[in-house]
Image (cartoon, rainbow, N blue to C red; front, side, top):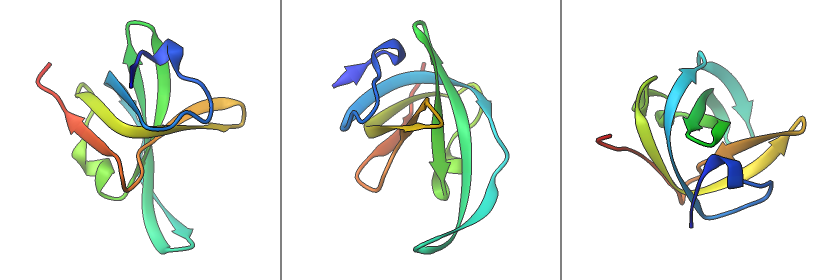
Length: 98
């Protein structure tokens, strides 16, 4: 189900979003239950709003500011009362030709 950012709600699953990366944070190392991992974030924007996207491991280097991306099978979580998009192992981040 492809959504606009304004229509995203907490705990949604298996959603698709097309948006432009307007900001990207520095990566940092964290320890997870699976071992050490790199983590970062990006701010996505479409004509309806903005939302944060969490980036893990190889996802970090796959995108840059200015890219228009399509998220497939993404899910939404709320962290400190702010909605965040996540793409797990069953999802994809695709840079489009916009």
